Image 1 (tube, helix red, strand yellow):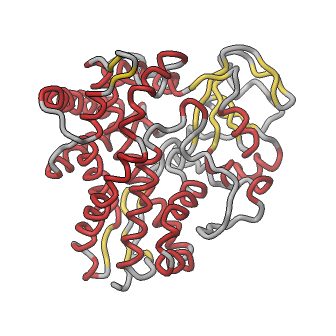
Image 2 (cartoon, helix red, strand yellow):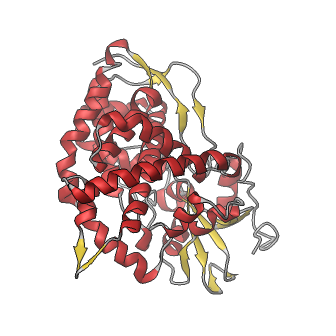
Amino acid sequence: MNAETAFADAPYLDVADPAFSLRSAPVRAARAESWYARTPYGLAVLRHKEMGDLLTHKSLIQGSHAWPALNGITTGVFAEWWNASILVTEGEDHWRLRRLVNPAFSPKVVKTLMPEFERIANDLADGFIAKGTCDFMEDFADPYAARVLCLLLGLPESEAPFILRTSATMGLALGVNFKAEADNIEAATKELYAYVDDVLAERQKNPGDDILSIMVQATADGDRLSTDELRNLALMLAFAGVDTTRNQLGLGLSMFIDHPDQWAALAADPSLDMAAATEVMRMRPTITWVSREAVEDFEYGGITIPRGTVLHLYSESAGTDPDAMGDAPFDITAKRARNYGFGGGIHHCLGNLVARNDMAVAYRVLSARMGVPRLAGDPTWLADSGNTGPISLPIAFDPV
């Protein structure tokens, strides 16, 4: 179904335009008018209640499998990897992968990583705190995300620049410029795949205590992950773990720049670190939409949604929906309705516990060492739809 022409009475949002922002007045106006809107990619779901309902609706499956094809990418290594990934598998195949992988992301495993997250954050901060200025992305968010990923995979931190470069290029596939960047994305995928194959071969011979080693050794009822499944999952860790973390850290800091009282609140009460990470995800999620696809015709919200319809559930629009959140400015001390920055249902982000904790540690460490951050130049940004975040974020601050 082409939602540009169907549901003609609904608002239309041209989200395929890289200049279009999902936080813009047209989106807010559309949300006030209707729970859904038409877009070039399908239907956009704009409100909190409807997003919660449709994330787990029995007539919908994960819709991200269609994303490469929607951008004209139907062949190649990236498309093959994407279409076999845990992100798009369904039913028993998906549950089997999750059963085998879940132990690697347990609270016990994540707890053991926390001191290392703090070590990495403090080490990076040591490099710029005394200067009172930095490019937050180049000097902190990018290397922090890459070094954390190296920690998860049991790699030397000297590999972080390579992991950052290849995973960030692959991450362009989640944005609205996917087609224009297709050749670069394909090359980065091949390069990272070859690297992962070598690492995986070593882990299978000499497993350690890192997350990849736990996955290599994982069994459930005599079942275990195949080599192809392991390499696919390892690539997903690098692809999703680095790009989303660095973008989310940058988006979070931009929120604290706009709300200096909240930075002061975190500095005064470091126990708010997890609340800070959650509030950032509500207000400025890097993954701006979650996709679903209808596997049958069904009725919902006063309309018939035909089989094959792709729905993009807008995380930020739902997270700022006044019907659910009230007059809800950025406030890390407030109690909120659930936000859907990590999705929901059986496709709820597998690494959400790692992501929330590594972000929380970063904000806590930095708020203890930096006064209120302020802009020290003009930031540059990815398009404000698809997967978004700062490219550069020059800041100044008073060292604590």
